[in-house]
Image: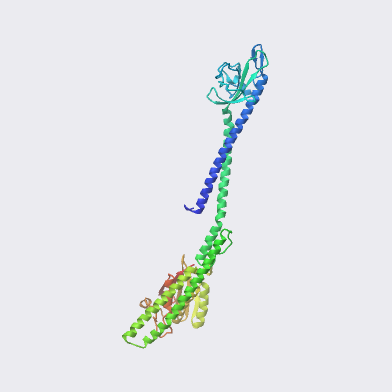
Length: 457
């Protein structure tokens, strides 16, 4: 994809939005999961706190804790799960008194509890953030408890869990989340690319239709388009119709003007031909120049009109029709199409109007028929951008000195043969207007070979 293309912009914008959405979703899900497992740990600590509160007793001035908790981690040193029981401090400040009892998991460490500020809430516990012996953050729940014994002091019970216990499930969830979001992101990116491909397919169809229109394979934009593009296609077809009508009017007006000018020029030329003075000579020269300019500009107008409308003319059909016409016009000459043409030659098209192709090939075939003894052969081949027409005859041929000016207006190589010498001049004008070439060579049949190159559609 080229930089700055519509497809690249849409795809880059979609992928950027997808990436941002996936990152936000991953961060949100991980945060929610962390809060969830933190809440689970807190609920587990509350269960242990309730169990510890119900199991302690005050006997003979001493605190008894028959059971060390329901979780085996309380028995493992520095396992991350701890409990501790202390007297309530008599004065405000942090509780620094030695604990009355503690879990074996604390080993020889003590939980340093913050000062009590105000009464405990109605639910009977507070959530605390403590610092463990190894510098880990501990999540703790604490409550105060007054045993019913007369000599029992008020107690403060704490159950704490190391937040490191959350790391393993959080890490495992994060890994699974990354894999799931990666697959989701890849699927969404693939879906976006596929959707973009389907979205731009009508534009590719429109581009192909415009290309067919440009090379002359169609006169209008064909096909069904989405309702968002159909108004554009309809408007383009209207513009094409109006443009074709305008070009046709211009061509008609140019032709009418040329014919209108030809008539007085012909009268002037005929009148000057009857005189031999200097004025008559000047008139003949200027009339010839004016006629040449009119023909040249008329041919240019016709060719430009054809290029603007994007016409294309099949090649073999005009050739076959002209061969039948020439066979009747020159009955003693055998007009034939060269053998060995490829099957795809039926699809070859001239980038121009059919009338111009008839005029070009008709003049050349007619000229060859006038000079041929018994045979005229025409061949056509195609290169990448050109059609190459070759017309051979078995006549006397054309001398190299005559080849240079045989296409000039009014020039006849043999004055005894019929013709005005204007046909080859028209051929030259049309060939120049279409940007083609024409050359004269020696033919394998013994006569002249005319090689005509024209643009291919």
